[in-house]
Image 1 (cartoon, rainbow, N blue to C red):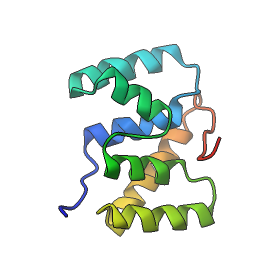
Image 2 (tube, one colour):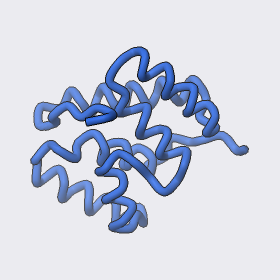
Image 3 (cartoon, rainbow, N blue to C red):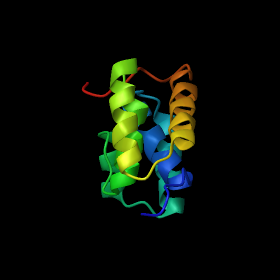
Image 4 (cartoon, rainbow, N blue to C red):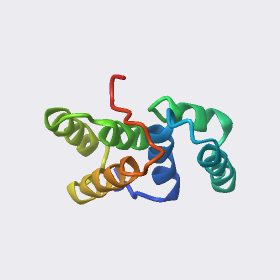
Length: 113
């Protein structure tokens, strides 16, 4: 299996999942525009905003980003590894999630909520 790359599609999918409940209309519109530019379908955007993806590795990356506790993150890292996501990329996903969650308009959204 080829290694997973945290490309713009994956990054945006993670951002969509983390900010879905933000209520920040300008942000959501920008995301929709960015998604169209990247070739994501409406169904892919909807899936990401629900915390998933039709692409298995991206789905695992989203799950890791949404992990709400250290224990949950550890399990999600294991699943991510099985999906071809290496440890360095897992850390990059976790840092991306932390940066997105620090934005003032973002309400916390965690796995299982």
